[in-house]
Image (cartoon, rainbow, N blue to C red; front, side):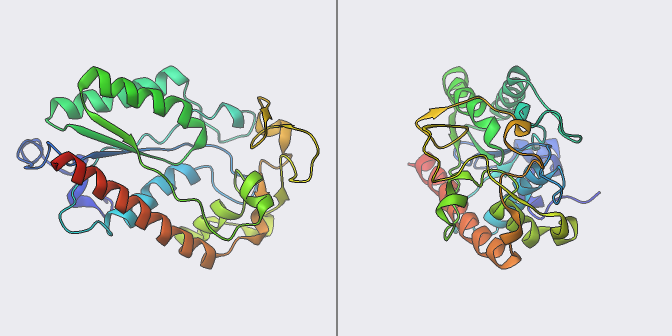
Amino acid sequence: MNFPSYRSRYLPAMTSGQISRLPDKGWAPVILATGAIEQHGPHLPVAVDAAMGQAWLSLALSRLPQGASCYVAPPITIGKSNEHTGFPGTLILSRDTLRSQILTVARQVHAWGFRSLAVINTHGGNIPVVIPTLREIRTLFGMRAALLPSLPPSGLSDQESRFGIHAGEVETSWMLAVARAHVDLSKAVCEYPARVEDPSEVKPVNAAALVAWTSRDVSVSGTMGDAPSATAEKGERWLVAGAEAYAAAIAEICRSGRA
């Protein structure tokens, strides 16, 4: 068995006695990764979102400042991915099932003595479930509950920034940096669900009026972005900046919990 690089913080790697003796459960957050298993175009594996949750944790936790502490719960690797139905490899949890899984983790770690939970989410379709569930956790268990903020990558074109929402330049660059062997750039394509210059105010994303959509409605390949423009160098740069932002957010949760 191979535990992740943050083994000393990974709750499943501990004995029951070790968990019971942790001295900082009153203020150190438990980090829960929520991801997805879903199609990511013809060039990326379906496990991108689930894998990136673990990548972010490894990078961020190694950058925690002195005095900050946290622990990591088992990840929720399948998410609410209804929009990617119809592609082989996509697994879908219902809203209620995802909510129940998050609540269950919160209930149990609260029973172990923890008083803070933070979610690192790597799939946008989970957000409408995660946010209200964190509010429930706050009211049901009296725990501090937070969604760790992600840092938008810098240097993207306006088109990619607004409509490169899936398997495009950013996610492909990330995967080139963390799992190059699982990326086939020869199959990468560029597709967008809309264009910046489109006159309509009705679009799938980033518009005054939004329409419900599935990937099949807006993309032939399942890609929504400029995947061929991705590079490992961009991925490394964005990963470092994002990990530092996550580490700072975790440190702030620690600081506020001890105040």
